[in-house]
Length: 170
Image: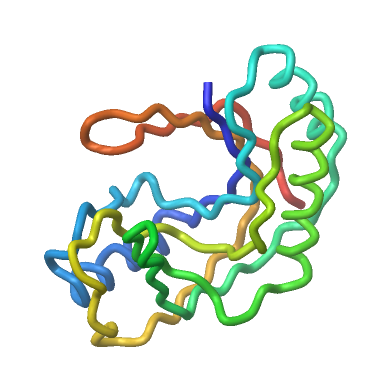
């Protein structure tokens, strides 16, 4: 089972991002369903029950405060044809949470990414051409109050996600 650690925008913010995305790019690529909006902290890859149990033990004793995440930058990765919403500033609290998640991933033997961490929410995949600049610049924020463990299953219409565990950020 492919799993990852993530934070999720609240419903109002997710809907606002979705409306903004529809306004700016009404027909760009395969849009990500609003219920799948998330900001990955650490991708863990395939994990068995033993690894998930160990991860749960790590985060059951975890302490990290809630954090505000700013989303104010649009990006496009041409090598993967992905349109995303990110930030021009990575808060130290978000960077700290990412590092703790990455360390937990290492403790359960998950392969970590060697890429520089770039927090983002994927908006669309498989764009045929680079998107035009947004009609309105993004300016969103949300308070992340929980860390979630999601599983990912690839389907013909895109990925299907489900929450396996959740830990409060207080």
